[in-house]
Amino acid sequence: MFVMSIWCSSLSLSSRSLAIALVVCITLVYFSYSFNACLLASISRSLQQYPPLTQSNLRNLLALTSTARNESSEAGNSSSSTNTSSTNASSSVSTSAPPAQAVTSSLDGAPKYQLLRQQGLRPSRHLPDTLIIGVKKSGTRALLEFIRLHPDVRAAGSEVHFFDRHYQRGLRWYRHHMPYTIEGQITMEKTPSYFVTKEVPQRVYHMNPATKLLIVVRDPVTRAISDYTQAASKKADMKRFEQLAFINGSYSVVDTNWGPVKIGVYARYLERWLLCFPLSQLLFISGERLIMDPAYEIGRVQDFLGLKRVVTEKHFYFNATKGFPCLFKSEARSTPHCLGKTKGRNHPHIDPAAIERLREFYRPFNNKFYQLTGINFAWP
Image 1 (tube, rainbow, N blue to C red):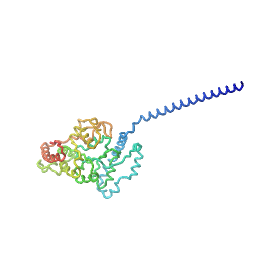
Image 2: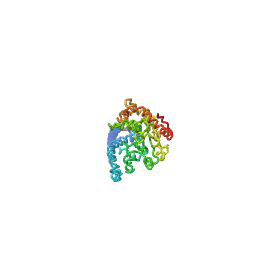
Image 3: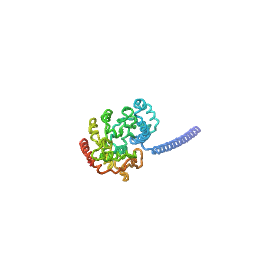
Image 4: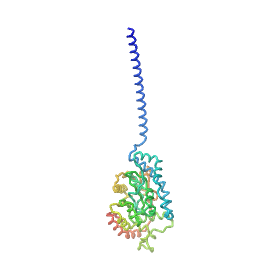
């Protein structure tokens, strides 16, 4: 009986210990679950503060970084171009691009590029796939700014003038002036003087015979006046347009050696390009329509480049004061703004008789241009 009592007492004690241990275990599990739940919720809230790192966001990050690089390099480009003639002999040494190791090192320090590398995307510079080759004062800057709204287009911020002024510096130098891109993006550069420079078509062909070429054209008479207006804004004592466009003070003989008049003979320059490139690799954009209906022309450009139509009517608004389309946002700015103050200048009054004589002069060249392009631009 005594033994039975001890056994029962031991059994009761063991059950009590087991119950206590069970309660302790349940308590620990509860606190562990609560702690982990709070931790996960905190992490989730932190992640929600940042947008998902999608391909589109990666390209936007690259665009912001590349824009800053372009802006900082424009001053250097303009200053270096003034010393071209004195540095030709040593250009292969002094103007060559930095070693690949140095470029990689600079990228390693940029947080945005670290994010790109984490996604397996390594930004690099490439020679351009597409060139805006002209025509001066026809809307090339507007075209560049408009098409740069597309996330798959990256462009040099300033005119590089490689094929007409700096060709002796080599393709390595040229590539160093291009923006960083990732796979799937198009590299673009704009220099309007390429269209009229004799050696450029063959030089571009040697770089890449598959290069796509964008050419903005407008009524050559209006273009000549716009060209003159820009030059006159920089020179107070410049002669009147009529004095420069004609010889011997009369309207009978047009001065075809004067730059603003000479550039407007588009057919002459186009024939050179067609010796190197098929017409299918050239897209002609109407400068007049680019102003009146920018979405239409940019749509054609996107189709030509094989891009999805991302840039549409929603990106533009018309500024009645400037008489020019403006942007609700651009690659560099997220607020509505127009192009620079030099765009949309008021033209001086030109004698109507002089304008009519110039139209008569250009008419046969315009018809030739229509035949070469297969497009009737209907200029007066």
